[in-house]
Image (cartoon, rainbow, N blue to C red; front, side, top):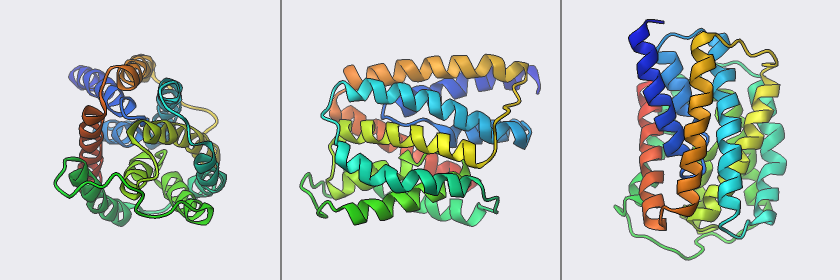
Length: 245
């Protein structure tokens, strides 16, 4: 990798980590995009993104857990089915171009909604139920394992759109959801021996440090309206990434 490319990555990856962590996400989709764009080998890209996802989302969960009442029962419904599904998805290698394109389009709707382009509704639109949460968790977990992300960019807008959680609860649930799914996906892909070259040895700790800062400011200093705007930006970034992949 050329020197100028390394410095671009040193700017972009921590920036994405800060932005994603500020809304309880790990940022794997952006790490995948950056590392692929700058021609890292496939054996490094997916496990690197998942490892970063684990660290950043883990810190984000700790930060947001302190500032909200964590919906433990809802999370249990989601995670019991998402974790094995993420493991299964991680064990499968398929072409994901069509899926990424469809997902990119789908993510535009919640992003626009969070920008208040659609009428807001803070009431519960769909009644909470374990079976619906199980279906959501299974589907998101499996798709997350397939493409090497934690699933927060899919879960967050669904929780908000259905009125199941408020913004900070959504961030806390998504962060722990991402953390566990990323571990399951990493194990499912058999990525036990991460190949870390000299550039990644610098990029990874800097990226994690930016994620720690983003999680702290997102949980303790950004207000709910700002969090919604940040989440919308995150979803638009992810959507663009999938559409252009």
